Length: 122
Image 1 (cartoon, helix red, strand yellow):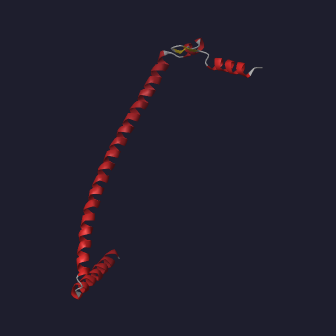
Image 2: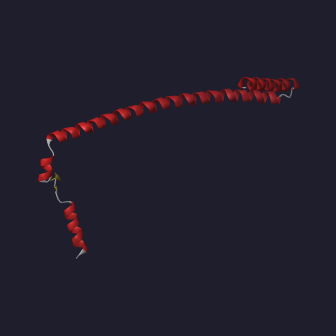
Image 3: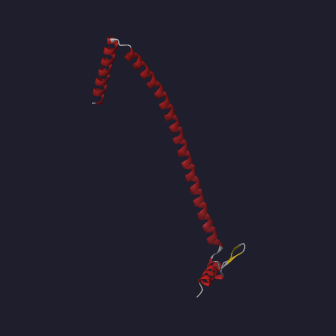
């Protein structure tokens, strides 16, 4: 048998019932579906659409809250970066001036802070 003819018959069987402008329903199928089934199907679809709408609204609210939280976190990081850069500038000035008294004060304050933190976390 010719393979082209098989393809044509398969295609004809596949697209049997499709007419220009829509699908032609067989008589047995059209008798099975009634108006109540259509209404139930539409109500089910409407419920699904409403559920998806609520879910997308909840997702939108969650994204907005996360964006605000990230903005605040970014601002806090910027402010802490400014504080740390000021502290580093002070350390630079302390280390540039080789005063033994300042160096002793600095080392002693580090030791005291370390001990306080150690005993508080214990």
